[in-house]
Length: 81
Image 1 (tube, rainbow, N blue to C red):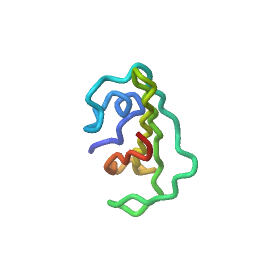
Image 2: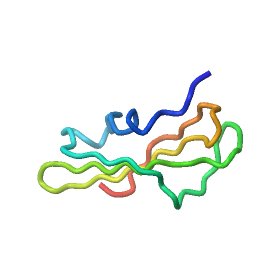
Image 3: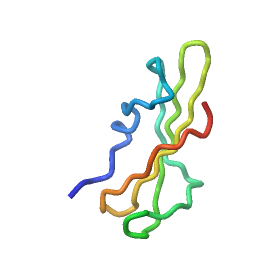
């Protein structure tokens, strides 16, 4: 059985929009995320990943995952970057 990625794994996951490595990354729970798991229908949770780059650019990505251990995780969605 596959498990949802940990916040550490989410922070390290390269994002296609990011050609340069971030200088600082913060991961926290997205408390205002109200989606559902695409696999089992259980309420999903999400992590907000904030990456800061040289030059001041900030990229915010939302990564949804299942609230149960079914292993589902949705595609990351860049909300600001």
